[in-house]
Image (cartoon, rainbow, N blue to C red):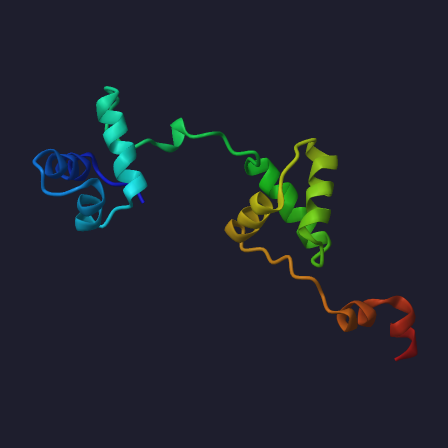
Amino acid sequence: MSYGIEMRAKVLMSYNEGEGSQEEVANLYGISLSTFKRWIHKVRHGESLKPTTEKNSRPRKIDKEGEEIIRRLVERNPSITLEELSKMYYEECEVIVGSSILCRILKELNLRHKKLSTQSIEKDKVDVQKKE
């Protein structure tokens, strides 16, 4: 959640006017102490209180093209594990991605990566289908 510059200034003004300790002012306005301390640090070092935008953040390891590759890999193998997906993504894109990144991307793409039960996997095998 990003707080507007007016809110940031109001909170800092309250602190500077002695309305309480850092912790008390943070609690009063419902913000975390670490966020409040970050704002104080910015002011003391002459930095802007303006909220950072996505342009200023670190670029994503997986771009739109990478998302489509992940979508294709999961659709081809719905029972793929995050570890297997990571290896396959590396083979295609030569980018190492961890399970937390993959989990976030799968959630954003509304894709499931559940392991199929042993019974489901067995049911799809050719030799089992012949017996039926």
